[in-house]
Image (tube, rainbow, N blue to C red; front, side, top):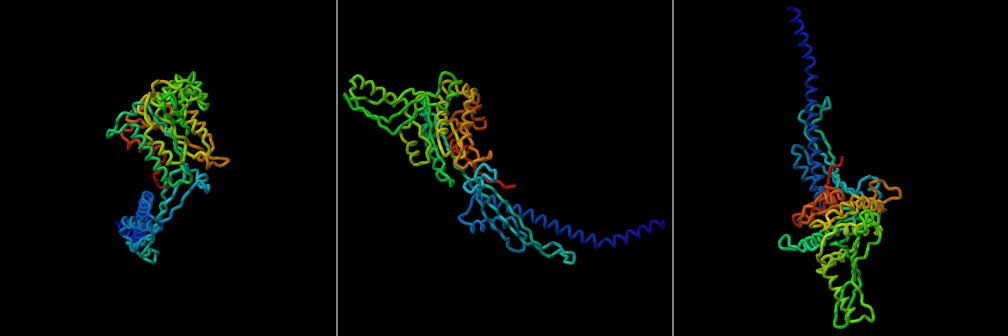
Length: 438
């Protein structure tokens, strides 16, 4: 019994002796908990402000700071004084070598928000450095990938079915043309170091190129004028030969004929009939790669650019590959977009070409070309990138007919209306989302 009483006495003495230390430890723990909670809350507020600014930047830095302070104040409610907020942005571009050094795939802009707040401590005891006030700081960096210079090749289906009505009574082709124009308007507004470029490569059973030359007939009562056009067929004797020679000059299938001196009435009649029929069937033409957006839009929206005939998508794909291959001073991103409303006339031919390496050869050839920002010893991030996609115009593209293996199943889209077409094109061209930097 005496032993128990003795132990109780010792325990009591120990408790009384340790009580001040326990109280100090509890107070220290409470203040540390308050500081950690305050820091976590402030860091979260800085992240929210940074994301908000990158999504909707203001006109100048002062307004950015004002907006960031407003957002931080909404989060931080128990601070003792005004929150000190600082905002600055930094750009990383090709021209200063920053993109190449960073290893990123595109130019970017970092929005940095720093915030500092002062708090009144829940418990203070200055003898053990538990101050009545404390200050915490938080900093968040949000990275936004900027629109980069791209070369976009619109590979358009100009078959007869594209002339059918779609939404609001408009022809599918008109909806597509208006959507491409809208995309080009956006591209023009992109604040890129170098201008992006656009091209249109059309196809029905053939591919048609147009020149600036005008052919005129005025003899024996036959009158007419036509732009000089050529219809090409890129398919050769076999799928293997087609792929092997895909960058060679294509076979001339047909053309607008030019009159010659001394032609007979019969010859003039035949030439006139031929040119009239050619113009009726080949109502489209390509628009070569250009950064002259006004000229591109003018040719695109021309009423003479119409649909007719069957479908052979490979003629458009190979024509686009050749257009990219002959281009110089390439932009870092090469984007090929097929816009089609139905299957090819020969449902299996594209798959045969893909099996022979059509799309692999396109990617490897174009990606091996030097782009305008590439250094002499380029990293993988600097090299030319090739993006390919296909958008079904009110048509669910069959993945097994060549498009899936060529473009990748994740790059096949089904557009139910013009807004879908617009959204999917922009998705293929560029990603402009912001993300918190690690």
